[in-house]
Length: 103
Image 1 (cartoon, rainbow, N blue to C red):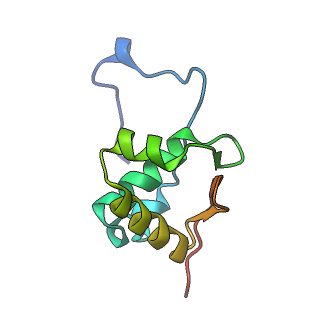
Image 2 (cartoon, one colour):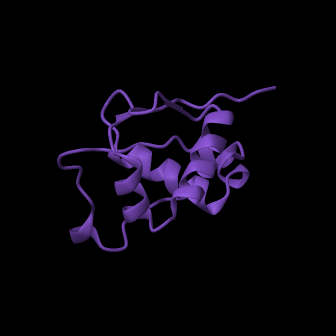
């Protein structure tokens, strides 16, 4: 077994305030590779800004400004994330879902 040791022990990150979490299987099971750059950017953003229930209240104008994408890019990425069942959206609120592996 590999022994893991921090490179810089005095610079180990600490969780303070909010906390975002993405399961390792997001990468291992191919979800990362299945997303375009803008889909990935939007999904990671929504995970980072969501609350403990996965809810985010950011409006599209602010999302577009922060992510530096135009409205069409945002809408296309949002719709593809909806189609892939990674998020829910009611026109105002986003919810990030735990992802399912479809057999």
